[in-house]
Image 1 (cartoon, rainbow, N blue to C red):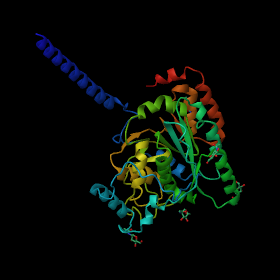
Image 2 (image 1 turned 120 degrees about the horizontal axis):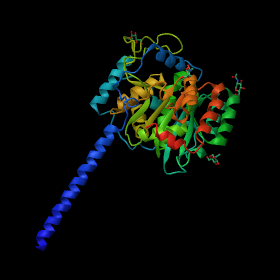
Image 3 (image 1 turned 90 degrees about the horizontal axis):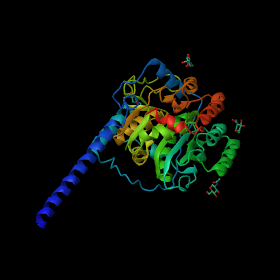
Image 4 (image 1 turned 90 degrees about the vertical axis):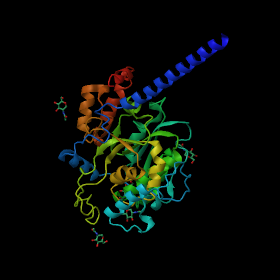
Length: 404
Ligand SMILES: *[C@@H]1O[C@H](CO)[C@@H](O)[C@H](O)[C@H]1NC(C)=O
Ligand SMILES: *[C@@H]1O[C@H](CO)[C@@H](O)[C@H](O)[C@H]1NC(C)=O
Ligand SMILES: *[C@@H]1O[C@H](CO)[C@@H](O)[C@H](O)[C@H]1NC(C)=O
Ligand SMILES: *[C@@H]1O[C@H](CO)[C@@H](O)[C@H](O)[C@H]1NC(C)=O
Ligand SMILES: *[C@@H]1O[C@H](CO)[C@@H](O)[C@H](O)[C@H]1NC(C)=O
């Protein structure tokens, strides 16, 4: 009797455990299926507006006034925890080979063409920027030109200011190259001593070195901010609505491994320019009129931090190409493999045009879905006042949730 009851009880318990397991599995599956609303989460399937207007804005921005560079240095990095065995994997070798071909380089070309190997020592770096907390929710990596002191300062005072976003931990690092202006260099050292948030690489800050700057960023996060969850790469002429990002969008981004959230250019849609400041030598991608990789417009790009090690490692094998957006957000992810892109449509979540952004905020307040935008210097403070006053009201969190 007792034995039987025991058996019945045991099988009941077993059944319950099984059912719970199945329910858990179903929930996980449903959650991952439902994680993205179609508009925002187009993965790579929806053709995006590779139209004239967008191309124009994209290139216009690329031609814009900001200049940056990359760094190099010889501080021995911590060995990356995620070893990719990039050199051994045949699929990766094939990809890298085809990149060598379109870039018209010999497979046995000098190793220094690999950006991660060109990067030497940091000229300026503070090792503890992320070390005072266990978890950094968002590390902002700002590509900035040495002379843009005022842009760095306004970011420190506004959307990059730690104390405004507790309980979220936000950190900002500014990535610079060297300057030949010795007066400016002295000012930069003072800035570094004062804020400890500038990272300077051993390369000239020039738009042809932007790829080096970006790879330095991947390396830096991997080394000095490994406790970060999301990495936001922006240019210094961008305004981020950090409130919106943290209290709304981050819910969609968390827990998605190897993911990139950006305004996406699908492969075969973005023309390769053959003249102007951003002209690509005709020997590179020689028979192509569009870039053969998916990649992001680089002004606002969010990446899951698990990509930092693999991306840096991939830059040791992936041949150099100087247009940073293509290299950092197209070629490297392609070599890393298994990366998921989430498309943030232009003028919906990110904008190249501050008129659209300001208008959207005027009309929709905290519900305006644009969280990242290029902004003209003369509109910056007016827009910051608008955003920050919206979000101190106390009900904005509730209102924000309505967007979902
Ligand atoms: C060098 O930098 C200083 C400080 O930013 C600036 O005032 C000066 O115009 C610069 N000189 C040149 C030649 O660009
Ligand atoms: C910057 O870092 C140095 C150590 O490298 C430290 O002595 C100094 O107090 C830091 N300054 C600030 C403002 O955090
Ligand atoms: C950076 O850019 C300058 C100017 O285009 C170039 O001469 C230099 O070789 C580049 N690389 C480094 C590491 O400075
Ligand atoms: C590759 O570059 C060499 C010179 O470096 C040039 O002679 C050759 O035509 C180029 N190949 C293509 C396919 O453009
Ligand atoms: C701003 O919004 C209003 C109303 O929707 C519209 O009429 C106007 O054209 C918009 N301005 C810009 C610059 O988008």
